[in-house]
Image (cartoon, rainbow, N blue to C red; front, side):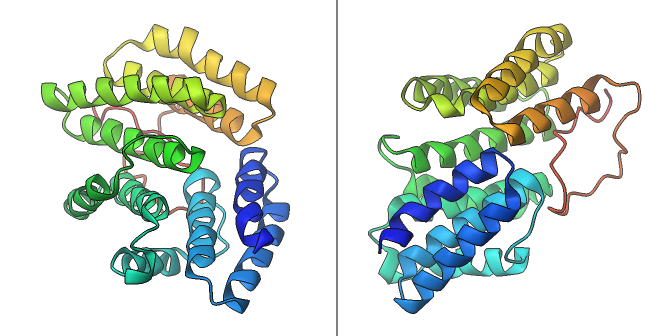
Length: 250
């Protein structure tokens, strides 16, 4: 039981530090312990981290299909009725996957499920990290429907709420600045994104030892501002870090 309660947090730290091999090792221990005790909650926490490995780092422990299948199955499993935060997190991960793949019809269906399981308050870090995925979803949806004032307002409100959440969970601040930089980019505020927000993300994440976030922010800087542009035919497959896409006509 101790492993099931402690390993998920350790795995998250290892993901942030980009210590992927060690993360694989501890997650295998978590999966073994959860299977041995027939603990669905433990299995769900295991798949939360496996999904994060794909979404955050592009590394695969469990296949994407297995992550998707587990998430869909647990959404209706009565044994997890009480475990709203874990269900929220898994559905937020699934939502983000569909958004990155621009599968908007599926994303809309999942978003409705996410709204049902949304925590009343973000008092635990897992719920807060789930909300980070929702913010990214709003930004990608705004990019797809650029100029939509309602979606732009949704992005502003989501980022404002994330800023407030960061007062409780400082570890989320680098991602907040990364996402805020992306919102600035989408609104054409290139100098703000390049000169202030991305450097702040890199500074904070470096100071905190969050190698994964630092590398991701540097990738964004190259993708957004280098003369070499990301191919318009790029198809996200979860096998590499996700390059936040610019506007199609940028």
